[in-house]
Every structure is written in C-alpha cells, then in structure tokens.
Image (cartoon, rainbow, N blue to C red; front, side, top):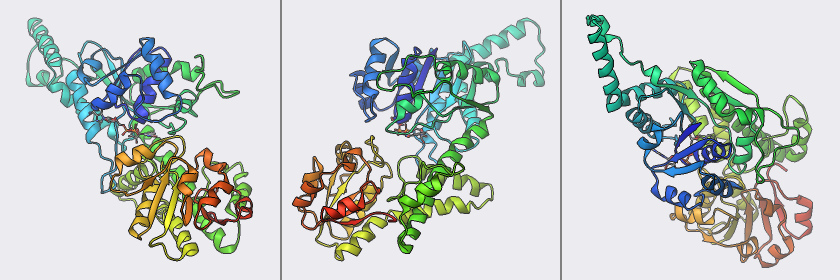
Length: 485
Ligand SMILES: NC(=O)c1ccc[n+]([C@@H]2O[C@H](COP(=O)([O-])OP(=O)(O)OC[C@H]3O[C@@H](n4cnc5c(N)ncnc54)[C@H](O)[C@@H]3O)[C@@H](O)[C@H]2O)c1
C-alpha cells in the first residue's frame, strides 16, 4: 500500500519505518529540514533502540523515503497518517495548530482521483476526527484538482439537461466522502521500546464511521494483526505472540480510548507514589507492599513503581487535555486532578530528602544520575530531572549531571540550566555531597558503589527510582534514601 506519514517524530518515524519494513511503500514528511536531511543520510534524529538499522534497511529496499514536500507526497498515498505533535497549551488544552495546518494542506493537495483514508495518529481531543474532516473539506475548496472535478461534473449535469434549481445546486457534484475518509488510529507505543510495541502491540484501535476506512487500515496492519511477517533481528517476536486484537469502533470512542489509557497509567503511578508517601511515614516498604498487592490479578504489578514521578511528552499533556475536555462538558474530574497534583508534589520529594540529609543545599554539589524522562530514550519533555535540577540551582547548589544518552539533548534544549555534564557515573560523583538517581537506566542498577563512594565528598545516595538494594548501599558506607521505604 502507498502510505504517507506526516510528522517524523517518535510516533511518525517509528510507524513509517515499521510499515516500510512490512513491505508498504512509505514516505515520511516533516517540515523540519534538518531532520529530513539526517534521515536521508540514514541517521535517526531520535534515540530509539534498533531504529537506525530499520531506517537504513527501508531506504535500501526502496520502501522508505523522506520528504519535506507534503503536497507531492500525499498525491500517491492510499493512507495518510497525521502524526504531528499536540503539545499542551498553558491552559492545559492540546495545541492543535499543527494538526490543523496538516489537515488543510492535505485537502489542498489531494489529486481527487481516488479515495484516501486520512488517519489521526496524533493524540487529539474527542471530536477531532470530525474537525479534521471539516478542515480537509476547507482545504478542498482551494484545491484546483477538486475544482476541476466539480466543474466537470457540473458540466456533465448541464449537458445531460439536469435542472439547476437552487436545491440541485446545493447537491455536491463530487462528494468529499468519495475522495477521503477520516479515521482515528491512536498510538500506544512507549519510547525506548517503540519498535517492539509497534510490531507486537497489545491491541490496534481503529475508529471510523465508514467500513471502507476500517477495512483499509485492517489490511494495512494485516501482517501485524496476523503476525505473518518475519521478525527483525532487533525486535524478535515475543514467545507465544500469535495475533493482535483489533478494536473497531467509532471516532469518539477511539479518541477516548487513548486518553483513558494514559490517564489510567498516570493514575496508577500517582497511586503508588501516594501509598509510598504513607509507607514512609508508617515504616512500611513500598516495594514489599506493591509486591503484595500487585500480585492480585485484578490489579497487576505494572506501573506501580514509586519514584520521583511520571514525566514525558504524553501523560501530563493528555491528562490535562482530558481534564479540559471534561470541564468543557461541565464535569469536574476530581480523580484526574488528584493524579496530576500527586505527581507535582512527587517532583519535590528528592529535594526534600536532600534537605533532610544535607540540611543546607546552598553551596553543595549534587549529582543527578539520569536526565531523560525514562530509560532508553533521549526525550526530555516534562522530565522530572529538569525540575529537580531547576529547584537545586535556585537553592544555590552546584548541579552535575550524567545521562547515558540525553546529555547532548539537554545541553542543546536547555541552555538555561547551568549543569555540569559528565561522561560517566564516577566522574559525576566526583566531589559530590550527594547523588540522586533520577532515571532508572539499567547501568545505574549496577553502580560500582566502591568507586562512586571513594570520590564523593559525603556518601549520600537518594534513590529516586528505588532501583538499588538499600542494604547493599548502606553496607557500602552510604546514607541511603529511597522513596517510600
Ligand atoms: N511520543 C510518544 O511516546 C507518543 C506515544 C503515543 C502517542 N503520541 C502522540 O503522537 C503525536 C506525535 O508525538 P511525537 O512524540 O511523535 O511528537 P514529536 O514532537 O516528536 O514529532 C512531531 C513532528 O511533527 C513535525 N511537524 C509539525 N508540523 C508539521 C507539518 N505541518 N508538516 C509536517 N511535519 C510537521 C515536527 O517537525 C516533528 O518532527 C502526539 O499527539 C503525541 O501525543 C506520542
């Protein structure tokens, strides 16, 4: 199938690359010329394990190409994905300006020769499917190919003697729904395991009002649904993984599924953090508590890790957008508000622990292990590390940082943060009064405590992700503080 993916960020690039791997002919479009140039050179602009290889392979096989020109790319496509960002506005609403620009451009660019399916893959507020349809129709008004077809149909009607009463003039000669249909296909991939999540998803959700759109998307994804493709070496098929459930529904429910999923996951983490804060006060250990209640099959153990709070480009913005949607409809979403509030509070926990142990922060040197919002990504959007660093700098501390992947991104994107970047955990610890684990990168689970401790001024370790064994750290001579233990 001919596929166009508009937006080559974490979602668009992974989706396009994986679809190309399955044999579809994919063009990925972005307005960011630097990104497109890097991609044409076979380099991924984002860090995602296994992605570079698949990009190069896709290009070599002639299945994947990159462009900055939307109009030309849309022309040949059976399916057009909108995968641009929907970042939060100050009000909490999703910023839909990128989606709007793309939808109108698509309308202006369709060659009007066959029926296309335009797919919202971006996370968008409920009702956006209908709104995108309206915008594409608006774009069609400025589309010469559309005007030509309308004129030729009108001409044919006139020649055949069809009366042109005011009623018939209102009847569209060319129905937009014969030219395009809008579907919703929300994305659930996790950064850091995006390729595995794309090839082996828990489900595929398709929201559409017309079975033509549903069937086209079903056939696009068929190799994934039926698991008939040969697994790439970088993303082996999990044992026993045989087929993917497909949820077909209408647009609004598909859009809501995405918000509900993210709101639930964020709530689960905030819940674990709330319990952790109570554990700490009553002398219980959150790790033990989660092990005990997470074994309940109605609850499950995942997404219950207490720590310095959730971050990333999705949870915060999606929960805020859902709160905003509820408000718009006169509903007060108390649970969602608490999910956000608990998380805000949790961002301060690491600094409170530093104050408890060090007393004075001013003039002290603090090392942050990890900057990215989670391991295996260089994504810093809404990363707890940024807020912790900001608080410490404001309090007069000297702040050092080490992230296995995200140092460069942080330096580039946050020049306002005067951090001292280091290239490994030991040089980070050098001269530090305390070290805080902020991101649970695997290498931090195996810190050489001996070496780290030797170079520190005082051996204080705040384990903001509960990844170390408190007894082992204490035995190595550290003052250890975890979260909720
Ligand atoms: N990142 C995730 O883990 C994730 C997971 C699921 C869903 N989502 C959702 O998917 C959407 C995209 O997220 P992302 O993280 O990939 O965003 P991103 O910011 O990484 O990428 C968006 C891309 O769109 C491009 N763009 C903007 N306007 C454009 C235009 N007019 N034409 C072409 N390209 C344009 C930008 O240059 C950028 O490269 C968002 O709605 C997000 O909520 C993200």
